[in-house]
Length: 514
Image 1 (cartoon, rainbow, N blue to C red):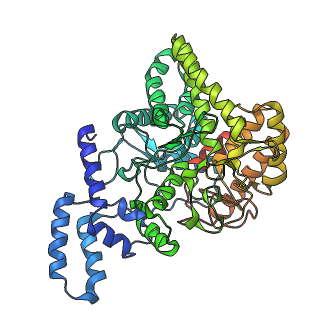
Image 2: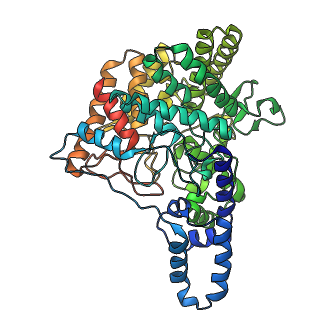
Image 3: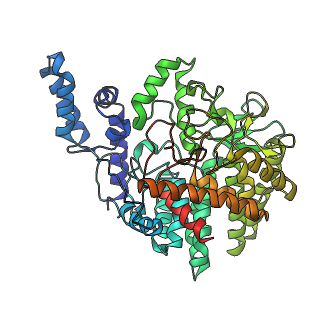
């Protein structure tokens, strides 16, 4: 295992490399169909040595017609390029649950030993989603863990939790994934949810909570950082927003405002096509949408048909604020169990204030649904999305609100194969006609919390059927599904639909076991 100081040095070196002429030249050359491929490449020599060789290579290579070939040969000489590995079987001959058990073995990675490149080494075993996603992903891991626990891989789930606690300590946040290019952002906070999943399996619950509590609290402070700087003149800073009544809610953000290394060419090309007034804010909004996990969706767009109109940082998201409410409640409960009544009261007070603000700004009595809030329009967003079910999942909604939300879900989101992600059909993957495993888990569990078991069972049956039908046809478990036309491959987004797939496997197993 790479020592922490050394791993931080490697991550900084890789970030410097991402700003180099060589990196940008390779990414813009379309040498790789997916920009993430080169961002994940492992250098065979120190980056500084490779860049020196590149300068010599440029001076020698004067034949323009050989430029692309010479660049390809140079990259292959100095970098190990990750390979894309397909994982599928004959769906007619293999039981889906047996295949998932095989997948857990294929998707599991041991503690990292790589000493260079963009990977942030993890000290314990972990599970990756699959396909182009060769590293751990933060919010994915909660949904993956649901299935791992059902398969009795309890130690593996705890090792993933330990990795996140370690990342929080090392870097001051839990990054989107364990890559240096993800260090400027996180993902929806699920650290407390993972601890809650594992708590029933622990004999010494107090010792387990002592291990986890400071990490959960540090993550919460990461999301609330800068709140003391808010004022009537400065209403938004980093991930916190001061609302008109003085309450504080949260938004998605990214510390950087440049093209993403893992999608460098795609971001630059989109900038050229769209020509926004402020390129830095354009890139930051792209990155902030990645922190949401919903990359991309009409939730973040001024015009649902144009990714160029992205404005993520001007939206107060209902799902993020509900997950932070849940984190405040867990911190309150866990500190009470540990005997710290003062801390417990502090977090209960924070949760109470957030619940009041969510109901004031994010509940629409007219729509009978929880909606995102648009900071520029001083009004709720017009986009209905499955994020509106998360208040039920965290038990923030009243009984009346839950009944109204359930009616909207059944009337506007329920399709043949499960739930569409938003009511808007677009080219973005987090819109109709696509459905996603994590949102089905939130919806089904949320409805069950409020005794809407018939609707929950209906959604569960349709979603499981979608996964099973596609598996029988292709032998694959996918990242997302077309829930309007089950036989059609899901489309949309920056890359082709991936297979594997961690959170689909996890949610399938957990729902099948309900």
